[in-house]
Amino acid sequence: METEQPIPFARTVITARARQAASRVMASGWVTTGPEVVAFEKDFAQWVGAQHAVGVASCTAAIEISLRALELAPGSRVLTSTITFCGAIHAIIHAGHIPVLADVDPVTLMPNADTIAAALGRGVDAMVVTHYGGHGAPVMELAAAARLPLSRVVEDAAHALGTTIGARRVGSISGATCFSFYATKNLPIGEGGMITTDDARIASLSRTLRIHGMSGDAWKRYMPGASWRYDVTEDGIKANMTDVQAAIGRVHLKSLASWQRRREELAAHYDTGLSFVRGIVPPPHPAEGRHAWHLYVIKVKPEFGVTRDKLISALTAQGIHCSVHFIPNHLQPYFRRFIARGSDFSAADAAFREIVSLPFYHSLTTREIDRVCAAIAEIGAFSRVTTTTPTPAFRW
Image 1 (cartoon, one colour):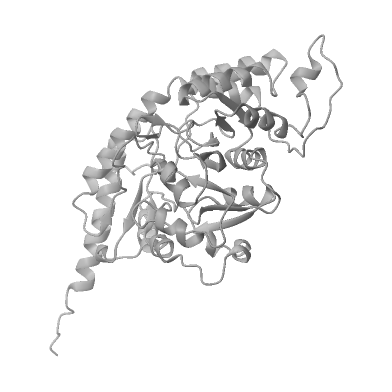
Image 2 (cartoon, one colour):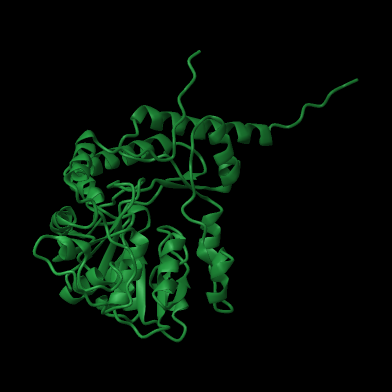
């Protein structure tokens, strides 16, 4: 019998044309921030519908730089979700501010107006809104609940490239939006991030902050006829994007629309395959707008028959690899110092015991999804039989 190949949680695809573009840049004699980054920024801004785009080293760096570009007072209180990647919390801290964590809606796993109101305390000065898994967060509603103008909102759109809220693509709604090009993301480069904004000052300041606070990057200083002189005008960091990364990104951006359509097809196939499995709750679909389907996150309810952790272990034994997004940050040892006494994260705590991120990427096949769904169904059915069948009475 032929052994089934493992199904990884994530699979990174760098296309042949993207590899050729990267090779072209490496042969050019200039590989760091330069004309490819400028071109990628222009293409990306046009794709999301923003006036400006600034290429950076990661989404985490994008969030930190965006918060710095808001020019908040040091020690400002910045609200965000407890269910997010820890890098978003670190970005708030590294920008010189205090993270304020909010509980989540039990369905969307993102804060709602009620959980934000409960977390406000003595008020907040800014907010980082996370679009979880590719499901768009209601940015305007959340800003109103936090009593903030949209100019004080930064969006963490690491999962949301291609997400729309109504008819509007994420990337041009708030003060600044931050995207990720990490290896597992919808537009994979390997590493990298992007800030989009309609605010020319935020864009200009972000360009300075990403390169040590210097008045000119290496491309501007080293090209023929350029001046080597520069001024350090801001407390910047080293977080610029390279031309090699940008060359890959420009090529992959041309395929993004078709990759997104494929993700929608795969999500629908999972929905169908899991619809009959008792105790498994598929991810919600937005009432309006478009889901980017970065993740496919199910919930494992008690009636399934085994816990989330046992399901993950059983799937791993069959060569099917899953993950969990995310460990709520109020449970992390370092972040506990920022949690106010009496804070309630009951919805996040309950969700954390149940959530599983199934294998999901545009190169996944429907046959692989069928195998995942069949394995989940079999694990649940077997567990319910073994736990409900009475032990036979033996006679001696």
